[in-house]
Length: 579
Image 1 (tube, helix red, strand yellow):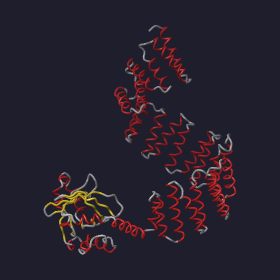
Image 2 (cartoon, one colour):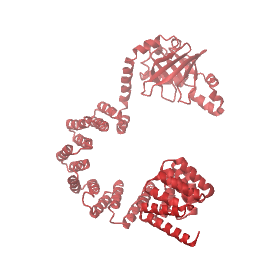
Image 3 (cartoon, one colour):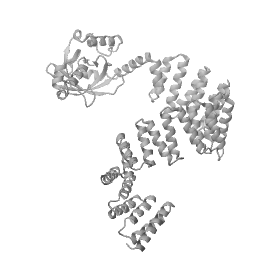
Image 4 (spheres, one colour):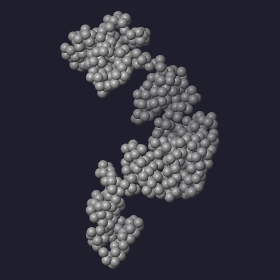
């Protein structure tokens, strides 16, 4: 290449880079095309056309040019890494990974590729492998801030908060005002439970740009989470006072300060700020609830209800919160009818979540009145719509009503099974099995299941220990499976398929669990049962008939418990005579 050509090449390259830096991607593309015309055997022109096209969003054409650049300079890892990135952008992850791996086969210290492979390993939850790639990248390039950022994320996933913070600090050295890094740092201190360090991190971050209102509001939210409402009020005030674009831009900070004031018992300051928010956006539900809480604190219940009613007339979203708060205030005042009317507002809404909250709150109303049975009925309706607090209340306060509910469901099921009972009673396969107890025969079960021959003797012994006390009893109405140490299983059933030696029944558990199929068979003197275990680990149990008196003592105790609780009342008279 002549000196003139070298100068021309250098000038073209500088012009392309300047255009890219200025964001003039069309100009960069035109200049790169000139480079291709002038130096068709050189790779750089093709590469920079690809760059310009990528930056304009044309990934497919960019790939074509990167490939041409690689054809001209097949040993250039930067070109290949760029091609891999394009495939990643198109969600062609496997293609991208294969290219990155091929780069490392030749250029084991290529930093961008090491970082990319670290990201892939992290995404696949191979966190130690990810650290290996990122450690290598930082050995090659100790100041590479991107690698520190990503390694911090990996360390965080591993719970290595100290190491993650060290990496964030290294990344901040070259990006002192990087918002994402500061938030990551603050979050890490929070995750590690270091409240003082979190507070100091907020102060340090704010000191770099005191005019940034979002930093003050973030600090305020942190103080509020810690219960430091005085600190929250002061930080929100800083955010409000520094807001350049008026009250509307500061709305969330004004609302935050209102709640901070309320938590400190400053009802006047709270009402002033909540009222200020209403003037800015009358449709926000929080302000009406906040003013209502302030008025209740001041002993002005009627004023509280008036504001909630005003909100119900104006607010479009989350009205259920207003109905609920209104009901809660009436409950506190023992105004039962008014409370019930408010909670009914939630039940009348065309919204399942609101309905669930209504049933839950109605339950709390009944609980406050001392009517736990009615509370249970309401909480059950709420829990049926997946209300977790309602489920907790049922478990905590309503145990006696659960057995009553179970009996009611049992009776409802029994009422619809008459035809099935008649069919079951006439079964030629099942009749000889009825009104007997069947206990697992360990030796036969072991010999008939090939899986036991493949496992260590110790494991087989453990499994057999779990199976040896399983007993089954059935009649034309139901099935009882006893396994001391675990809850007994009581089921109704219908016959699905029947032959001379095998019958498939559909078990309908009375404890609310999912229906499942069981296969009963006859093998000599043994009854076989399949379907009792978990799917994929189901064992065919071989069972032999035993007298009631010969049942293991712990099984007899379990039977007596079921009888005393009335849990075997569903069975026929003939079966209960065995007891």
